[in-house]
Image (cartoon, rainbow, N blue to C red; front, side, top):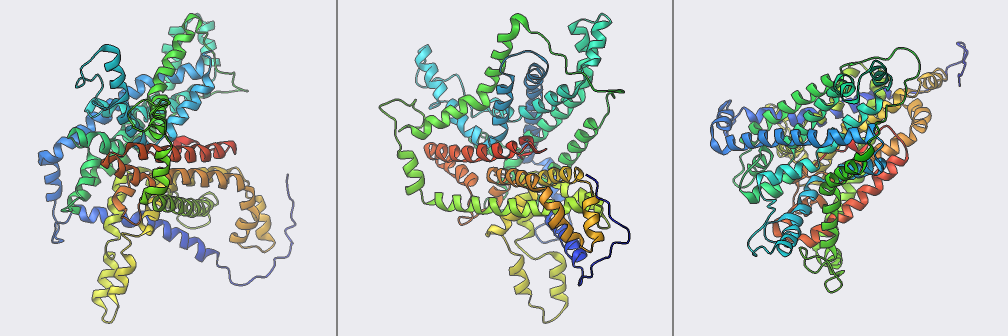
Length: 594
């Protein structure tokens, strides 16, 4: 529909236009949200305990065996995970996208289920399954093969066990990138190869594999990045096994006695490497491997599997046993069994675990309250911020809109544990500039300023962390929605005298209602799953569900953990289903892993 408006249409008079003030206020908030914690991180990395400049922190980091071992472990872990993900996910992506394998939609849905499962919860589920002494699979093996009580087949508390668990919840990144690349690839190219006499393997070797290779390489980088920055699974599985990764080592530096300078120095290389990997991923995916000239593309070429059909389906379901079917079964078993690691049956079925969690465990109500309050607040503020920043960048409404777009997506390069360190250092004391002003000007109430910036121990610091981590996905979804709406309607409103803010509120916002709701849902889900930043910033009064689950794991209360985990999964699946029902451009792949 086209709206024609006369150039002579009268402009309505209005009072002072607050648009610029409000819009620049949002821009300043974005800068404060991201730049401040990263600035403190850099500052602390280059000072000693007295505040003097030094590079000794980095010398300690790269020369002390206590730090060298986690560095090597993290690199080997990330590399191994990336390779395993490619070997497993690439064939699955091809089977789902390009063959006649039955139940392909079901396989995609189960991969989505592994996306929305918090990796730390998956690690706990695998404790239930493969702990050396009490794991359900080891108990089954003892019964089946007559092993001694101290013998076991599986040991999840090991380096291979950690690689396995992280790969279970990382391979979906590779799967989605490969499957999407194959879905978008026109069948004309493969048809042309077949017409010219190319067989199935020759066509795959010369056409399909080269075209999907950029997506596979990008998926490998994403898998490497996720394995490198993950905190929950290593903390649950590596620490009992007696070794550290870089994320758990950074966390340990805040245990008594705290060493914030070393933590900052250890966080900085992790941040730089994350930026490099994300840039490499962007460059790989940005390549144009082919272009189609002419009319509509043909549908993807479907390969007939013939006698291999059920073998292919079996392969997919064996893979999906590991991140979805077995862990979910273990959590349900522990939730309703008198003993968490005993298979449920009529004689040991109980609802006591649910009663204990909701009525006897004192921390549950506070954690649930904190989680939902912070989730709602983060989703609401994050969506508002994403709407306004997306408007500024797509409509080029302010000077420096490109810089704002960069800042809005920059947090995707900040690992949660690194952001937690930066926020801790930022809000346990005044910013340097404010402190300098207080000392320079007599009569300035420095104590009042100091208390205003000391947010550690309050929900505000968790809100800032969750808001920063959730912003990139929210911004990307809202930016796509804005680009789909032509600015003519806003221009018409402004010609009739409305300000930018009024046009955004009365004209554009109603058209974006569905996108806004979907964005809100995804930010909420990402918030209730976040552990890496929360573990650095919580106190006894600001504990959330993810931290409560982590604490209960240290005390060994697996039944209570399972009940809380099932609650988290039910809420997560419900909200993701709602968001996907709205058919917006976002997808669970944008939910950040904890």
